[in-house]
Image (cartoon, helix red, strand yellow):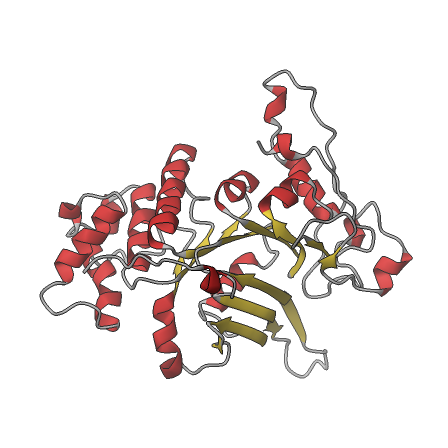
Length: 351
């Protein structure tokens, strides 16, 4: 049994494979009983919407705690959303029971951030990869080992090492095992939750090249979660920037990196290492944000970024800006800011 290669025609590519609509995840905080306190919630994700087309890649970027990983776990239904829709091929899976959800789990797989904790140390690599094959009854009995070895070879590992345990592999090799496990069920969408952030820089490049090969050869669509702007620029067609549970800017990669409109996006790109200084180019002025990220338990009114924004005015505290196209914005480029404007010539900071 070989990997399924998906060809995408023009008609299929025009319709989203995955659509997320106003997705929210609020975690309740348990208060001490009898104290009369109002029950509060952590607004981890608060109204995220985007589309993912077949074979495409969407990058979710932002600071730690902005809701990127929580969004990925909701898409794969490891978490049940508080509200919103997760439309996979037009079917809403956000409220499905486990029995109904089972066929969709095969189509939506996840690669976790930490390759050390995401693999069962008590199981051999063969058992780890073959478990989804047995769960979904994909391979006839007696052919599981051959399929496991085929998958190991596909991700660049020695097929003869199938009987080893995770602790006998390096971090990069363990991440390849996690990728092989996700590929076992031939998914159409993979949620890559910061898959290279725990790896050495040299190993990061190898894993990223592997993911790019899988996307090109097998037609798999990716939601790529990361905080490394350089990695996202290399891999993703479209970028969505998150801040405190909301998407504040979204658009094609070229437009986000060359002409970011939201102040937060501009600050993120400004903070990236400037390789131009190595080539003798004068360093660009940095945008230094003041203050800390507000608590998701009690986020600011209006625009959530206003407490750290140098453009903030009274309207920012009273009216939440919608994520809409702005003037001088290219096709599909949207920003949630009352005073959005492009800031060009930031590409050198992430080149």
